[in-house]
Figure (cartoon, rainbow, N blue to C red):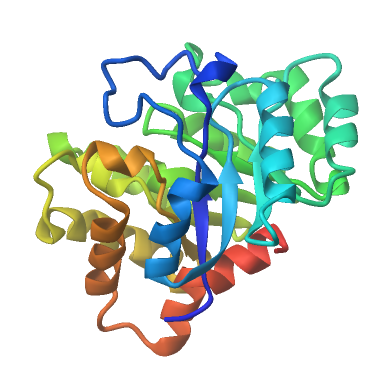
Length: 277
């Protein structure tokens, strides 16, 4: 495979003080991660293009990521940032940020919110309705707890392009299947929804095997079809349970019987089309 797109990775600088979730207990992650650290990993995998995703819930970090992308010599072709979608100034903020063509979407921290139905609030809905005309997409970082509200949101906003991050984060380590499997299959019934095959090894935990991942991987493939899936490393979060190389190798093994066309979609085509890279 050549010309691969990594549709989901991060960088961060601890000195920014943005990352409340990033505590010393997360030892593999509790340091700076830069594009220079990322470079040899993506080169080894044949990745030529990437999408840089927010890791802190503030607009300042979004600008930080846009600046990094602008200095990446064309490698980072898209940024998924953050704006408080419920704020009174959300649409003006997004309008300003979207003047930078590298901003491709926004990602509210749905998984971390106390209200699993937050995305259905009226003030959030007004902002979601504005995203298509601003040329922006929604990255949905959800688990089974937030999927019912996401399904209602999809019915309300049929023009909104949505990608479900990390396969909706099934509890693989706990053997979760219900209610994740039917809910994610229902989300896939919406034709404008895509899904990222990323983050699965983190949900499986240290000591994961391909056989442990396979039923979850296969269910996402069956639900969305290869042409609506995109591959992402979720680096450096992947380091909690593996490495960039081990997740990439697992993906190659799990798709060994796929057609050239389907593998090309997963490893680049879907992300290019969805984000307009």
